[in-house]
Image (cartoon, rainbow, N blue to C red; front, side, top):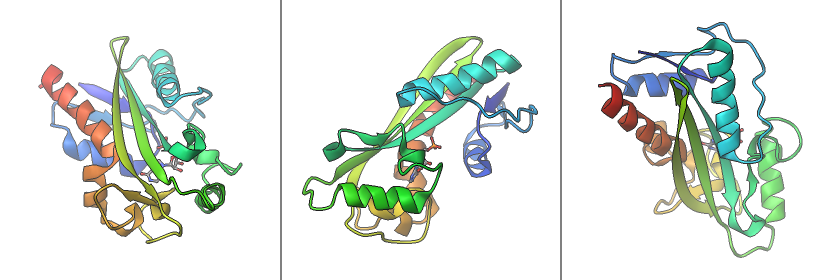
Length: 193
Ligand code: IMP
């Protein structure tokens, strides 16, 4: 079976292909010649993930899945959440986004936060969602150089290092995305093995 992952992120594609068995061939947006700027205008991670997978399913008539991730900070009522990529205004300016979070939490004792990933899978027109969560805390200063996004200021529960101080294997094992992907893969194995 062919399955499109609605992403242009090669890293995410390779990560998932390595975990799937050979009965499922993973295709990228590039493989189906989709160069569209897929809309992400939802107000929740669930809505955004569904918007992306539905867009690809309807336009290209292929089974597919899409993901959406947010950092949810308790003391900021779940912000930046669905706006994580553009919290400080510009798309994907990780330095500015982290600076804004650190400023908003200046002097705040409650630094609890979590990353949440929602995957929306559409098979033959039917949608299934898979959620992965990792709890943790927001550090006072950036630590580490690995990873991306908010990794230098996020320390997962039960660990001494920030995500940006971990090697990629460890991060993938315990991360929000890793957990959501594992649920997706278990589902695909059960249904299509
Ligand atoms: P996306 O839905 O995977 O594109 O994620 C949206 C935004 O959340 C990204 O632009 C990053 O700012 C942040 N983000 C997602 N995953 C991670 C992660 O694993 N570590 C740090 N930040 C992340």
